[in-house]
Structures are given as structure tokens and as C-alpha cells.
Image (cartoon, rainbow, N blue to C red; front, side, top):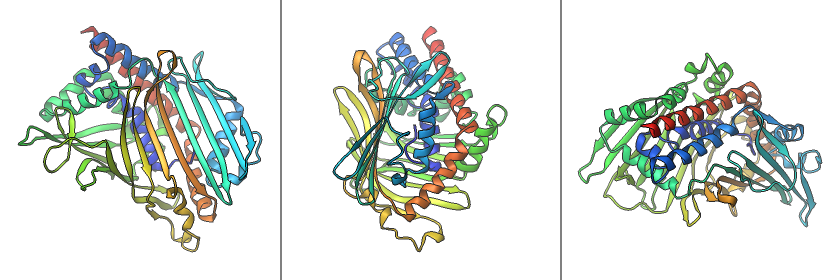
Length: 438
């Protein structure tokens, strides 16, 4: 669910993380697929539950009238929250605080018949049925022109222990420590349906695995992102990919405090290049002596997108990337407190730019994603997003650009993207059935 208008880089990240989860978190190879459990039967149950939960989320999505209207209103005025403060039709709870408004929008979602229905209502419980989810959007007026947005999403994905996420990623990295031909043959043989489903959007052009003298392997993947093969069954989605995703440029780089890179993913000209180094499934610095990866790394993000006539985005947005490991949770927290370099049209030069620094002041921008143990034996795939905005002319301008992309996305594009993801999840489940039957 969307809180702020998504940039093209965010939209691409959603496609790659959600749809591509079948190729990464959901499998990637036979070893990673089997890492879902201590034995084949358990791995099948856990992997199928996770894939089924995501498949359900994107199956014939329907929204109650209240939530449908609220969703678009929030997207339109995310950077001008004063427009939303007194709109009683949006919220499921409204309170007056010392500094101003405090608003909540709670949403319950789950399969009802053949549809995944989002319904706005107060008091939504933590989900306990596979595929069900709870969404909470909070808006708080902090005083003057400052507003805090907080989003919480919990999605029930079965009984897989959260710690299994570490096992899956380790198996995935370990599987790349082989000759490139063996890696390619593995994912084609183990996950043929998944490969075909995702291949309509993502194509692995090249795999390079270079053994190092210390026993580790330097891995480089080059993946083409293109809407061409989507034209037949997903024409609107294909057009959106061509207009917004293919021209996007972005980079996500993880480094330690000494400046050594541990993971690097960069996209430009439709090509995503991923580089990492692995030893027995554990990441190592891409260059330099092998050592244990620290739990806290520095994440640097560059993200540029073309919207309308403008190329907009940020570069050198830096923050902490923390791998959280608890008895009942596994996840990743990204915390940005340093303002980046903004890339905006020349027409904004006369606008006051201090509001661009506001999101990174104080508690900064926080995004978390991970698994945690929920009630009644369910594991929850959870995400949180916190950001403070200062309403101003320049923020309203950015919001207008973002809503342009959102408007293009809503409707046929979103329906086709959801169908694409649901089909990819169904393909993965069929592959897991075949693996378990061998």
C-alpha cells in the first residue's frame, strides 16, 4: 500500500522485490528453495505459504469505496497534509492534540471469495490467517508546517520461523559459488516455471563467478529489465515499464565504516548490475581481506527518474543499514539522517529549499522490512515507514510530480502488475511441488 507518491525507482524496487522475491527470497536455486525448512516437506510447506500469501495479496484486488478514495487523496496531498487534516471521510480515527491534528487510517485486507479486499475500519486485529494483512497510516501535526507520516503493514505469511530468512539468503549466496554455467543450469532446472514467469520482465543476461585465492567467489550478475515481453498479456504494465522504469537510474551500495563495499546494485539503460563476494554463503567485502560482515553498514542511494518533462531524484542519500537479529524476528532497518543532493527542475531554483532538509532532521527517515513472530503461530512479513515533511511550495511541487506517476499507475497498470506478480507466485509454488516430489 502506498503512503507517499512513489518515485519510479521505488516502483521498480517494488516490482523487483515483490515479483523478484520468487527468484531471490523465494528460491533462486534448488538449495535456496530447500532452505525454507529443516527437511523437504517442511521447506515445501513454508515456501508455499509465503508464496501463497503474496499471491493472495495480488489476486483480483478490490477496495472499499472509503479506502479507494482515501488512497488517492493521500497520494495527491502527501506533501501538503493540511489539505487532509479536516477531511473526515478519509480517517477511521481523529484526535485533537496540543500541536494540532492526529489522524489514523486503518485497513483490513484479505481474500473474500476470489477477491483480495481492502476495507477501511477501526480496530483491525493482527492477522492470523495466511494472506491476511493489516495496514495503518498515521498523520500527526507536529506544529507549524511540520507533519509526521507513519505507516505500518503486517502480512501473515505462514509458520516459517523468522530465522529461516538468514538461511535462505545464505543458501542463495552459497549457490553462486560455482561456475556460471552451473548456476544458470540450476535455476533453469529447479525453477523452470518461475524463470519463465519472471522472464517476461527480468532476464539474466550474464553471470560471472570468479574464484578468489581465499576460497571466496566474486559474483557479478547483469539483468535486463524490459517491458517488451509483457506486451502480449500485460500491455498497460508494459507501457508503464517503458515510460517510467526503463529510463530510471539508481544505485544501492552497502559499505562498512572503513569504506569497503559489501554489496552493489546499479541500474542504468535498462540494465541492473549486481556485485557481491561470498564465502560459504557469507558475504565478504568485494575487495580486500575476508572478514565477518558487521550488523551495521552504510547504505548509499542514488535514484533518478523521468516524470513528465523532468528528471528528478536524489544522489548520495546516506544512512545506516542494520541487520536485526532477535529471538522472534529477522529483518533490515534503513535509517537516513543526512540530507542528499537533490536533482530538481530549474523552475524550482527560486523556491525555498530548506524544507528538503526537514525529512532528514531529528529522527530522520526510517524504513524497516522483516519477519517477526505473530499470534497463533503466524509469521508476519512486516514493514514500517516513518517520515516528517514540512509543507511548502517546493514540497507541493514534488508531490504533484509524484502524483502524475501515481495517476498513470492506478487502474489498468496496477491490475496488470498485480496479475503478473500473482502468476509468478503461482509458478513458484508449482516448482516447489515438483522439487518436493523428486
